[in-house]
Image (cartoon, rainbow, N blue to C red; front, side, top):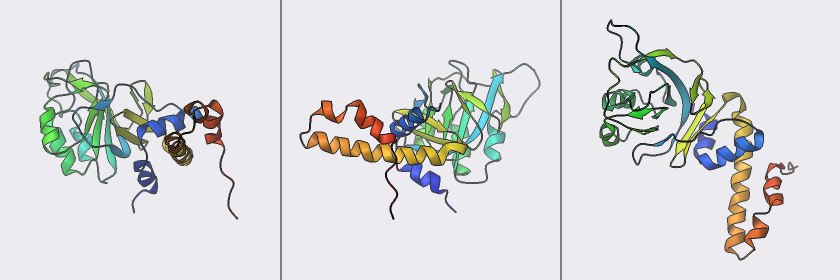
Length: 223
């Protein structure tokens, strides 16, 4: 059965979810994790991966491949932490493997190489930048399914993810219902504010602090 939270999250955008987190005093919005090609929005549940520097000489499994192999549902987003500056931790072979497992996309706190390969198959990749420098013999996977730090935000396995052209936001799974309820109120309120400005109302009145404060006031329950 489809996750109803994902359906509601997909109807929103990263700006609105970021605003809801702000109102609730929650961390989750990041800066710098943006689309690495002109890719679609990603909405899903986090499958976390931690990378680190290689400290041994014997051959190892290719980083991230075990995490891809472990995915059994179609709601996952790979959330990869620990990518060093300028070194790739994603590429086209991984993108093809992830697409075959019906993974929805990848968020990297680091860089990708071979970005044309991801683009060619329509696989969304978000991160800090693009490079040609390989991860081989430089970094390894050190953990998966554990909490990771992404652009200063702690992300746990199964947290909710939304990423679009404005950036990437993570929502703690324990707070998703609360965040979505508020985000939907924010979206309705802001739609009304846009309509008011277009109808000729003063933007100074429309954007007064009291108008934003009213967003957090739940509407009266019917019946």
